[in-house]
Amino acid sequence: MKAIFLSICLMFFISFNYGQVDNQSTKNTSVGFELDALPYITGGYYGSVWVGHNHLRYRAVIAKTETPDFVLEDGFTNNEIMAYAAIVDYFFQPDFKGWWIGTGLEYWDAKIQTDAQLNTAEYNNTVFTIGGGYVWKFYKNFYLNPWVAGHLRIAGDKDVLVDESTFETKSFLPEVSLKLGWHF
Image (cartoon, rainbow, N blue to C red; front, top):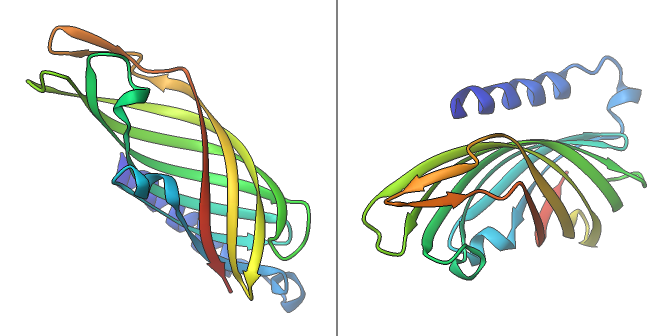
């Protein structure tokens, strides 16, 4: 499932980038990448590559994060999430700066344990995400991107049996973070 999802994203980005017909239409095209602080803080990683044309930016994202225990229900620990996402953003200004809004789909492949750490239960969710932020270019095409998003579970596991306890995945999760990016 993960390999198919990433292959589709790659084909989409390649076809978009090379599908332009004339020089006028590629004038406003840019390619870039981003790193996000939140997954690194929790012991994971985040990377996204993107292709943008005019006011639209198409992103493929891969991230790994571990949910801090203080956010989890009592009795659970080690909630590790691998996320794969395809996102489309709209920028209100040209040159991929200023305010933006975006939406897309994510696939979360996750695992969790109880505090006893006897067994590990695996679960997955398909998530609809919507968010926005502000791209501030601080040096040429290097930028900071503070952002906020909401994630709505639309399919997948709701109740996860771990040892003799049940972990209930949230139907809605808010998120806020800061990205560092560059584009050319």
